[in-house]
Image 1 (cartoon, rainbow, N blue to C red):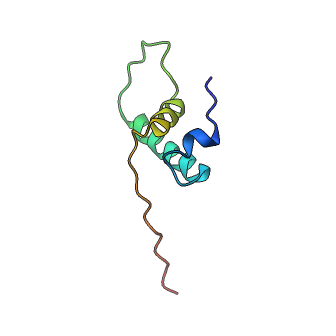
Image 2 (cartoon, rainbow, N blue to C red; image 1 turned 30 degrees about the horizontal axis):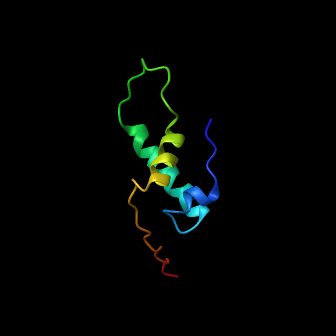
Length: 70
């Protein structure tokens, strides 16, 4: 299992918390695509998404939350 350091993931994200959120959301997107279940050496989706984020392959934007009308 590969260990990702905070310095690795923050090269393409503002901070480590945002990096984890982006990687988790990208893992959910990857999970929607069909996979070949016959491959036994396939990497986990979270590992793949963290690798993609560290390599700069994921483009994202932060959308500010709207405040609810009180």
